[in-house]
Length: 279
Image (cartoon, rainbow, N blue to C red; front, side, top):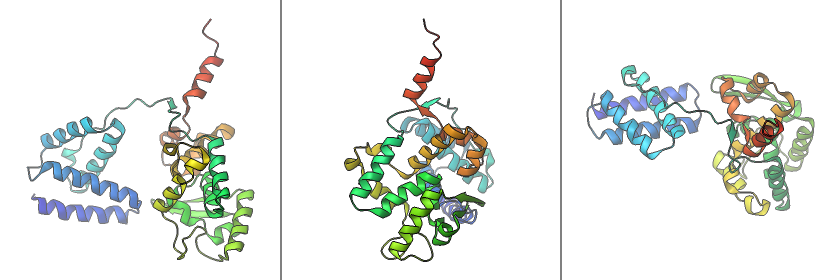
């Protein structure tokens, strides 16, 4: 099969991913990873040896987790074109029992971000942070927080072929209703641009980063998905029901949810000290 044919197959593959309702970010990531492999192949014959060589190159350039993400994209593409014989095994990674404190957003830091947004008189951003963290939704699901959802106290989210219902906390619902009245929004998404379009991931990411200095929070910790992680840790600390948390977050596998509730090294060390096994 020529490179032209592979390019045609890639176009069909992208259409397939979109029809499967994969997120825009996932489709773009998979396309980049497959194109990167084509660039490495450089018109050479597509063989298992070539794929194995590419895996070795990835291992030199990326961390194991990133390598597995790129291999997963390739494996998916190979399956689509009927070449399961080219699929590669993912790297085995020992799951850490605690996360780096440099990456974990604490509750106090989250509150400082909200305060910084309010001091800047950015009510929309302050409320947006509370909506993501108060419900545990993905940033891509924010568009389902509509005027109708606020009025009935729950949002129906449809993503990746799955539908789930998210309840809005009473206090959040009240804040959102006040915001809708103030901004004169009667229908459609709550969080929109001046032109009426839903805020996208890049807009939200930039706005959050701009709060870091005033909030005194390390910018490496501040991005939308970390708010979702904070929700998961706080919810699990009270409920201790990982299966229920998985349903709320929209995870198909509890193994994914386990990643969300990993505690910091400081907390893990506190648990070890509490054992009092060292004289």
